[in-house]
Length: 90
Image 1: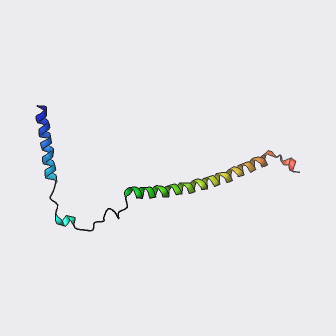
Image 2: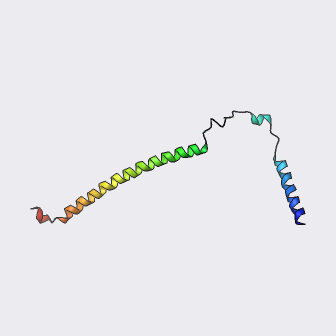
Image 3: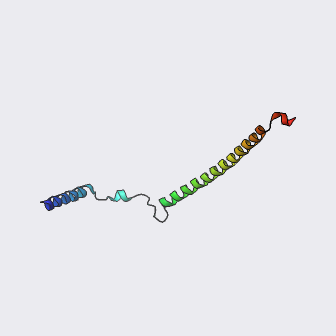
């Protein structure tokens, strides 16, 4: 019983596949076809994108590092100036 239901399901799927497939027309095949050797692969594009993103991140990290160092130096200078009492300068 189960095998006949399985066979019917397989036959139904096969019939649907045959109905969905259309014969290829010669007109559909016309047009410019780029050979696979000359097409850049998707992985290459992804690698180039990631490489540019990494360079941008490195630049941003360097700029943030430089900015952080400047802010730390300012804070240290303020802290040193705040430690000295104003009457000690006279």
